[in-house]
Length: 227
Image 1 (cartoon, one colour):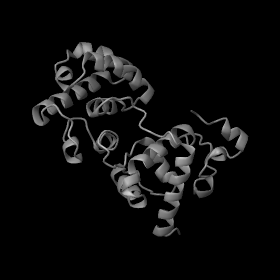
Image 2 (cartoon, helix red, strand yellow; image 1 turned 180 degrees about the vertical axis):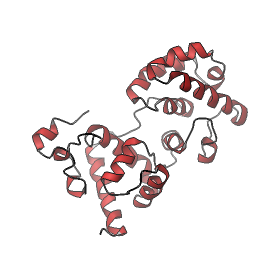
Image 3 (cartoon, one colour; image 1 turned 90 degrees about the vertical axis):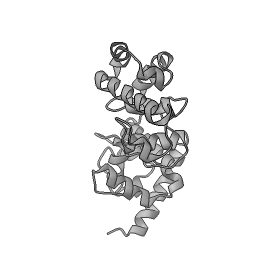
Image 4 (tube, helix red, strand yellow; image 1 turned 120 degrees about the horizontal axis):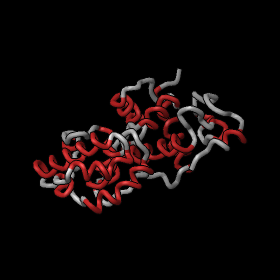
């Protein structure tokens, strides 16, 4: 049985090794300010960052701020968002949060978690993305990769995002939360895949209790790497 202290030391060593493997780890959504990041993050649900990044240039050229987006004609907005899937629901979501920003925050994206999660369609995951990357406020982003890797690495046994956020937060220094999540997301997208992780090409294999879940042969594992 691993002690809490041993788990903390292992988690911090894993993070250091991932920092070496992914020195360019960052938010992979394109944005220019808190508003564009907030909208892009909401749109990223159930699609890829690549697809969102291909869609938002036209979106923000047409609707550069909350006033313009709040007043968007639904059919025109849906036509732009159609490549993302669930485009009607996403159009309603970004219109609703834009209206809420205008009505309650003078059109400015708030920099507090409790205010962000009060916006329509904004949960803790989205709020922490915005806080960490637009405001420099450390946060744990419990996206699908962070949830999966936190369980594989033995940081948690829970599938509840709030529990994982709390347990992962106890293992890492607060100042490192945002970047540690970026590194886990990079690792999940490039090496520790959901269906067939590249265990034999993993920089933290020696520290991972789930080693062997995926391909262990170094050459075959290297062929599975992405990015």
